[in-house]
Image (cartoon, rainbow, N blue to C red; front, side):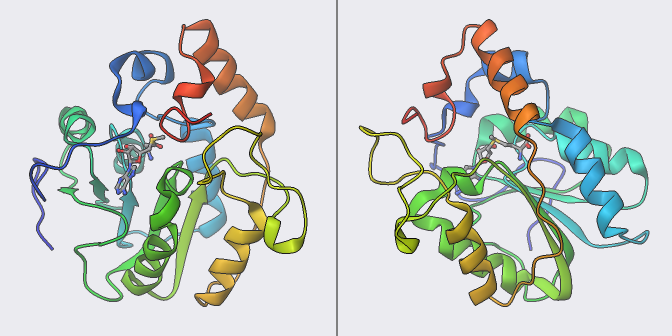
Length: 225
Ligand SMILES: C[S@@+](CC[C@H](N)C(=O)[O-])C[C@H]1O[C@@H](n2cnc3c(N)ncnc32)[C@H](O)[C@@H]1O
């Protein structure tokens, strides 16, 4: 693992995600997703991770969750993101946490390196790399470790003969469907501890974006809707 207080990792890769745009962070604050630290704190309470747990935030963005975790004083979390811009914003926010530039689907960590992984509002952006990323999460988590996913999802799955969650006219990539995510996690050996839905927080987030002049179609799916 290469760690640094400055982002390191593959060069020349630029993010294709609109979450990089500074006006989005002006509205969202350092946590670029619905719920912000409220949902991170809730997950922490549920997992009850002891002091010194090895924790990583995959797709850490501008470091909002890392800052929150550091302030708890229990761990020194590692952050990984593929966006140089967002990692650059995370640096001044953090006292010591290592930041790594890399991709969720090819994690530069050894097998069983972590007790818990946060992955907040990232899987829904991965499309074709989603399975690879989850396989990587299973690899780098220790046996019995926690995967904490906070994300938007669609109800219904074509695999189950239900209508696809995405509206018509959008690219085939589609929205992460609950059934598909749970099926994939089960196949990879995860067992579900808790599933909660926080639609109100999603609505609040989207409403703030709209009022701030950001179109919802610019958010998830890099402009796909
Ligand atoms: C909606 S933002 C969420 C950021 C952060 N998790 C948070 O809660 O504030 C999505 C993040 O995922 C990152 N991301 C997207 N695809 C990625 C990939 N393949 N590997 C690593 N990071 C990725 C983006 O750069 C961005 O920081």
